[in-house]
Every structure is written in C-alpha cells, then in structure tokens.
Amino acid sequence: MAFCKRIGLFQLTPENMTRRYFLLFALLWTGIAAQAAQPVNIIFIIGDDISWDDIGAYGNGKVKTPNLNRLAREGIKFTNMFLTASSCSPSRTSILTGRYPHNTGAAELHSPLPAHLKYFPELLKQKGYYTALAGKWHEGPHTRRAYDTLLVNQAQNGEGGELQWVNLLKSRPRNKPFFFWLSPYDAHRPWSASTNGPQHDPTRDVDIPPTLVDTRETREDLVAYYNEIARLDHYVGELEKELAAQGLSENTLIIFTADNGRPFPGSKTRLTDAGIKTPFLVKWPAGIGAGQTCQSLVSAVDIAPTLLALAGIGAGPAFQGKSFAHLFKNPDQEFRKYVFAEHNWHDYEAYERAVRTKDFLYIINKRPKLDNGGPIDANQSPSAKALKAARKTGKLSPLQEDAFKVPRASEEFFDNFKDPAQVENLVRNAAYSRQIQALKKVLAQWQNDTGDTVPEHLTPDWYDRQTGEPLPAKDQRGEMPGAAKHAERVNGKGPF
Image (cartoon, rainbow, N blue to C red; front, side, top):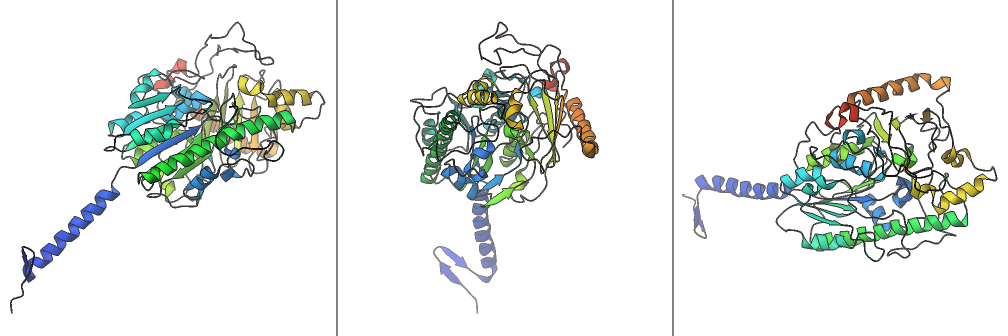
C-alpha cells in the first residue's frame, strides 16, 4: 500500500522522507555551526603598576578584589606569565606588537612605536572587529590607526578612567565583534584622595612586601595603592554586569593583567619576579572551563599571537611570540622553556637583561655602578622615604637593602624554588655552575638572534637618584638598545 501523508503543503513519501530528514538535519547543523563560529569578542584590561601578588586570587588575603577573584574562579589563572619589561610603555608596546622591547624601536619609557610595525588590534580591525582603546595611551601616534575609537586622558574626579567602560560597551556597533583595550590609570601614582569600591584600613588590611619596612607611612602608602586596585576591581564588576545585560557574557573573552610591578622600591623596573611576573586571568565561558590553573611558562610576547589566533588570524613573521590558545583547553601542557626580559632607561640610565626558566633566573647588568631603587615615582614615595630612614639604623634585611646597593652585581643567579623571593645571588656558587653557564649561553643567543646591542652612550639619568630633582641632561636621549643592528626590523625569536 502506498504510504503518503500530507504535512502542510508537502507530501512525504518513503522516497523523499529520507531526503527531507537529511535536509532538516543539515539546516539545524548549519545553524549550530554558524552560532559556534561567531567571532569571539575580546576585552583586554591592563592595570597600571600592579604586582601579581597584590590580587586576592594570587594569595593576598588583605586586598579586596572580589570581581577579579571571581574572574579567576570562572576562568583560568596563569601563575607563570612574565612581562618583557617592568616599565610602563615598553611593556605595553611589547604586548601590542608581540615583540621584545628592543625589537620595537621603543625600548625606553615614552618612546613612540615606528609606523612600519604591525599592531595586533590593527589586524583585528582589518578582520572586521570594532576596536577601541579607553584610558592610558602612550605608545605613539602611529598606533592611532589600530583603533576605531580612542578615549584617552579622560580620567575624571579622581577616577582611573574606568567610567568610560560601560558607555563604550553600550555605544559600540552592534553588527561587529569588538576588541577593547582598557587601560585604567589605576593603580599609578599619585593616588586618588577617594575611590569607589572597598576601602582598606592601614592597621588591618595591609600585607607588607618583604622589600619594604613596616611603618605608618608605608602602611598608608600601601592602603592608597590597594584602594586604587579595589576601584579597578569595582569597575570590572560593572563591566561584567553590562555584558550580562546585553547577553554577551558567553562569547566574550576577558583578560586581566598589568604592565609591571607595584611602584615601590624593589618592584617596578626590576627583572626579578617582583617586577616582571604579572597577574593573568582569562574568562571565556564559551571556550574556557571554569576553575582552571595554568602553571606553564608564558611571555607577554605570546599574547598578541594568541588573540589573533582566536580571531582566525595568522600571526606573521614580525610577531616574535607564539599562540598559547591550546592552554585554555589543556592547561597542564608545557609551553615555553624560557622567558626573556629587559630593563632600559626609565627616568634613569640602565641596561639589564634576564632569562628565566621555571627553576632559575639569570640576570646580566651592563651598568653595575648604578643603583636600582626604582623609577622616580618609586624612589621618592613615602614607602621609599621610610626605607631610607630605617636604613640609618642598620637593621634592613638584605632584600630591603638591595634598593640602595652600589655597585650592583654584573651577574645574578637565583634558585626560584629554594629562594622564591630571589634574595641570594648564587652566581659564585660552584654547585650551580652548569646551570649558570647554560643560561648564560641561552641569553647570549637570544640577544644575538634578536639584534640586541649595548650602546656606549645610553640615555642618561634625567633626575637625581637621591632627591628626584631634574638634572641638566633631562630630555636628552642616547642611543636606543638594538638601534645599531636595526633591531626594530629583526624578526628573530631566540630560544623558546
């Protein structure tokens, strides 16, 4: 008996039912695939002068960062992410280009990036992303082309620039994926007199870093710093509320990180973990499982290739890093053996280079006759003045005394597991001679591969190291590291 049945205008028979079921399945699958292929929205939040261990998710039980802590719980926390410089603009330009500071042509503070380089937000823009920067912008005028919208230098009423975030999200074009580079002024000095978000008490809510002395001045200095971190955290929460209200939470990747260590002696501009280790939290419900921790060694030069890969863009040869996107799914995999960092002029003449593995840190210093008490905002801070006063008693620890050390060692070597605070220089310890020689060769190879140089005439001190007063050489620039080899056009990556 012939089988037939009418459904609406269609007559289904044994011959065409299979075809129609297949067509229905194909349409459903196409819809699912199209939904899955929606470009990921990306929000990159980079705090200013915030140490990795000044976030609650990284163990500081005093600082109040509930929204960043939730970001860690709902995404992935990287515990071995390292910057290429502990200095504001060189660190940021390195992230922006996926290149080491001396390979950007802007290795020193407030040096503009050259026009010929590729900036990863620019490539996202060319791919069809709406791109915007809100907050601090000091990477040079050529980077303007990377953004559809620039909202800069608009901190109001003591706010760190975060007031723009929600409005930016509301006013974006609705027909494009978006990339936001959100760069609040928090927690850069000078501190705000008052802040939104949780407040801290100097007697209860302070965790004194081992590089500082415990005095009233230090505690009040740290409380003001904590309050600015808490303000940033408050606006991260407001941003997430708006994402949820617009139904964007699932397919928006949020990154929180920082550009260098806290602006205190012993942290900012240092190549130890206190300066170059950074918080790195990533949340993306559509692509990252909650509650993950990744201990793999990762460099800031890897951020740009990773975000480009997530957008379906291949990083060209000018990007010296590599994508670590696979770590979002497999956080236990090893990634790098080495990360590299450098310290160039930041208020004061300097030339240091470092290579770090999970086990060891090796640093060379070509200006050992100069101290490193940090840049002017660190060495003239209330905490620094308290440290200087305590020094007169002769009771500083080796780590506290290190900010004043002159001459400094031309080589330093630390065992990261036995000495996590990196206090004891083991470079003369014969028991480590094999490891020291190995890292010395690796660092030399990286310098050679990337076109690094040690100019005879570096940019000199612009300020007195003791008083902070301007010097006659202020505004004079020397030769940029790598300039003699045109390192801004060298694409060598060095050991990985």
